[in-house]
Each structure stands twice: as structure tokens, then as C-alpha cells.
Image (cartoon, rainbow, N blue to C red; front, side, top):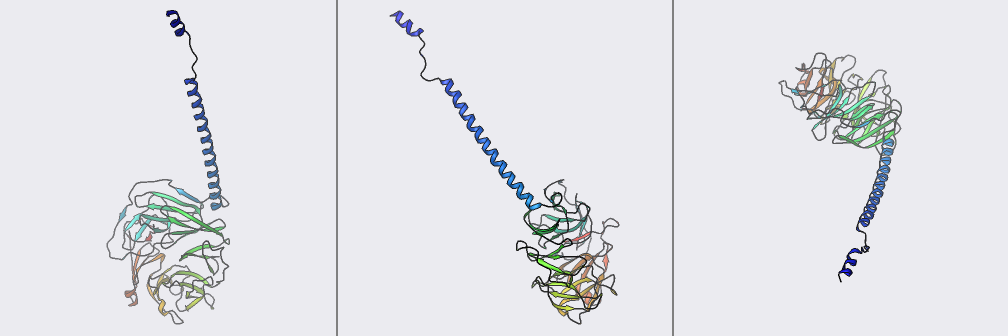
Length: 391
């Protein structure tokens, strides 16, 4: 019995299942599955990235580097410095100005210095009210569009663009890029849904008219056209008379300057908002500058505009309700430089050539008392600030 038991213990029976080998084989299978899954994911990612880059290239093609840049080249967390001067004045409703400056001023005299963006040409508040859309002045590299938030954060939306115009509500932007005109929506701090169309070599966007863009085909000649983004190419210019457009009436019609039959003379006109820009009413009495500077009151009653020969150096107030063959204008103050901003139907503000603030009271002007300029304390000598909506 002892010998039998000893033989059983000494005999090593082979196991029916090898646990170690089974574990190794299972690990190999898991590794192969993971490798295959990783390769598949990499392939899908490569395809998606390639498609995205192709689409981006199609949207931003141009002869040179692409201009759409969404990012933050130099964020800061500094609050924007402000200063105030006394004097009551309502806040204006617009905030664009063809000056070049780093200093903003509101109609009530408050001052704000833009951080880290350089000289700006045009400034409007963001739709959310949390900062500013800033169009740079022209340079050899083109124009830029920045977002400057109230906490000091600066982001670039466009770089290397041609002419840039902003919608009055800051929800859209139009710009020239190479041979094309583009329009995009402004959402937060990004541009979305860009639409483009080819345009003639000298064409430039002028302003938004509702959902359309007013385009001047050649700054050296009269004539504009309206382009509706996404509705086809730029229409043929059927208007050969309009020189400048100052603003929009509540009913959608435009107020502009048109050529006259007498050489060297121009007329004011109410224009139909169509491709033809047909004059509905004209008034050839006031002698106007052709600099294109001016602004229409919110109710459509008044136009502030620069006078021409015989009125050099003076801004004029025109009653648009009496626009006709015998239209007249009264002196409103010194010549306008930059934007005209209206706070309501009877009060407007603008800057003169010296960067001084001019506040116009329609009632006073009609009574024969033109507005006088007032210096803005804190503005560096020789610098002309940009008039913006109150902040």
C-alpha cells in the first residue's frame, strides 16, 4: 500500500488546461483588438481633418496667406482705463468713425483707451455688450478686425483684409479679400457662415442696408449696387448717379448724394433700396462736400452733413421732410470729421478736425445758434479720438 501511494505522488499528471498559456493568449488577443481599434480611429481622424482643411481652404482661398484668424495672440486681464469730463449729453446710437486712434470718447465726454490693438479706424459695441468690435486703420498688411472684451482680453477675427464694414447691430461683418467680397456672422468672439462673391477690382463695401451690403464699384466714379449674401453674384450696377449714402430712413429708403445736371454740383436724394437706387425725391439747394461724411437722425427727419464750396468748414443741418427743389440747410457747427452719432431725434454728436467734441441740439441750431466744440481732457496732443456709443 505504501509503495502504491508513493508511485501515485511521484507521477506528475499533465493538466488538461494550461492557465499561464491561456492568460498569455488572452492578452495577445486584447492587444490585437486595441491596436486595430486605434488604427481605425486614427484613419477616421485623418479623413475628418483632411475634409476640414479642404473646406477651410475653399472658404479662405486667396492669392497669399488666408486672412481669417480666430485666436488670441496676446490676452490680457487688465480692465480698460476710463476718465470722465462733466457735461450732460445722451448716449449716441452709432459708433463708427473713419479716424485712426487708440482712444475712444463717448458723447458725454468719457474716455477709454484700447489695450494692445494699435490705432483703430472704427469701433462698435459687441452684440452682447461685453466689449467692442474694432476695425484697424489701413496698413501695408491690410486691415484687421479685433474683439476687445471689457476684461481686457483681445482676440483677432480678421487680418490682412481690405475694406471692412460692420452692421449697425454688430451681428454681421463684410470685408474685401483679394478678388472677393465676403460676409460673415458675428457670434460671441467668432465669425461664422462666411459667404463670398467675386467683385470688380476697385469695388468696396460701404455699409449694410438691412440684410444686404451696399457696394461702391469704383470710388472714383458714381454708382452703387446692393448685394444680398447667398442670393447669387454681385448684381450689375444699374445706378450711375449716387456718390455717397449717409444713412437709412425708418421705412428702409436711403438718403444719399447724387450727381446733378450742372457740372460740379450735387443734390441730396431719397433713394429706393433697390439695385437701381432710383431717386424718389431730390433737393439741389444745399451745396455739399463730396467727402461722404454725414448721418441721418433716428426718426429720418434730419441730416447732418458737411457743406461744400461757400460752406467750407461748416456742418449743415438739413430738414429731410422739406427735401425738394427749394431745400435749404442751416449751419450746425464746425466741419465734421468721422462719424455722426444721434442719441435721439434732436441731439447728435461728432468730432471736428482737432478732435474736439461737438454736441448739436437741433432746436438751438434752428434758432440760429450753431454748436461749439469742446476739448476732451486727457486726450494726448495731436490725437483725434474715435466717437463711440456711451460706455
